[in-house]
Image (cartoon, rainbow, N blue to C red; front, side, top):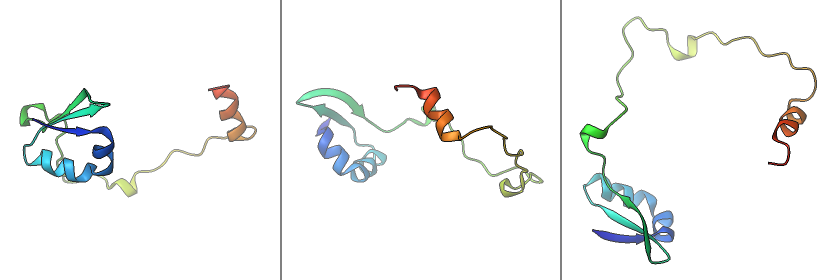
Length: 86
């Protein structure tokens, strides 16, 4: 299994993902210590199945949106208040 540093992976992520799609595996090193493995997903592990919509299904752009919320005050101030010091 080949190794790649975190910095190299960040700088060339698309290239490494293409290689993973071809079946290659990598050990990711952070300061020369192995921290992760990058490997293709087996077909049995695929959790998401992409399929076309059912015939007669409403188009996404035609789904009615709920009415806007009426909030007293400034929404940004409310958000900052909720977050506190986070």
